[in-house]
Length: 165
Picture 1 (cartoon, rainbow, N blue to C red):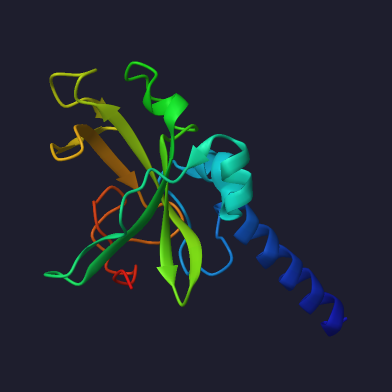
Picture 2: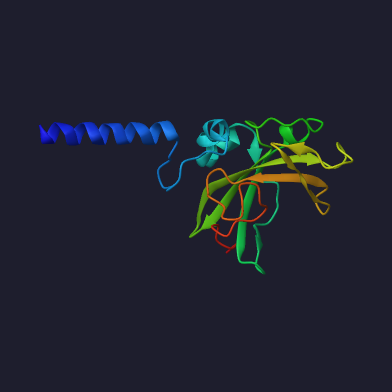
C-alpha cells in the first residue's frame, strides 16, 4: 500500500511539473507567456535545423558586456524575416542567440529585429519598447526564453551567459 501511494505521489508530482511548464534544467515554472515561442523554437537547439529554416551567420561577432560581466552570444539571423518590412511574429523571431561555451553553441534566447528604415520610431512588441542599435540600424528585443535572466526576460544582456571567448 505504501509503495503504491509513493508511485501515485511521484506520478502526480511529475504531472504537476508538466502542467506548470517546469523544464529540465530549470528550477522555476515558466509563467512568462512565452511557452508558444519555446515550442516554436525548440528545434533550433540543433543549428542545422535553424539553417534549414533560413537562419544563417550574419558575420557579426559574439556580443557581451565586459563592464558588467554579462554575456549575450552569437546570432543566427533569418534574412527573410528581417527583410519583411518590419512585421513581427512572436513565434518567428528574426534572430536566434547562442552562447559559446567550451567550443559548444547553446540556444539561450531569441531576438526580434526591425530595421530602422522600416520604423522611424521604436516599435512596441510583447509589451516592450524595442531598443535601438544604431550601429546595425536595427530596433532589437531579446527574449531569454532558454536561459533565465536575473535582470528580466527582455534585458539585452544576461549575467547567466558567459562572456565571449
